[in-house]
Length: 219
Image 1: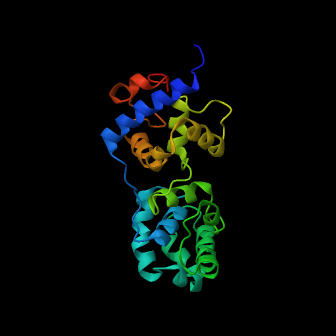
Image 2 (image 1 turned 90 degrees about the vertical axis):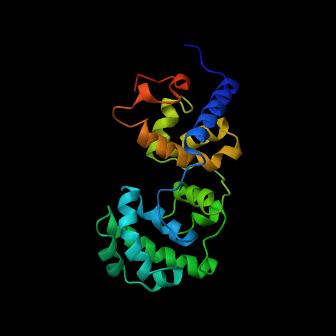
């Protein structure tokens, strides 16, 4: 099969995004939060566990620690007690206390609207920063590549075999999609990955973009 030209790849991506918008709209964040700080905390907690599990602990967590100042003064052990149902709760609790302290000391308790500054917060990597930029500030500077986005990008052949990390996959997607679409990709593809493009037994026969997917029926 001849290699797809970049222009053709972008045209196929545009068709897929049109169908995603029709099916999912702009997509919705699955995490419950009140403000950018709480969103950042929720995304940090979502590593290696489901959003549903995070949403079960954050009401209690945010009632006790509603903002950066509260987290900055919290005891790690007390946060661990609340978030212990989640994976890696020891490390996450330590990071959340440090996150509150750093946010308070360097940014006056407010989450910065800046991709690079966000990554100075403990526990916040590029994926988390991308989610916060798009969801909290609607200022997408990249695309958050989680397990769903990584899988779908490769099945759609928007990322090649050499794009074997989330960072490389993100760069491939940024070359394929215009910046106006970066806001929506993560949320849309998370829902799409859960509904159709599952890691195991993808529902290709029911998929609304199967005619645009080189991997349809082969995953």
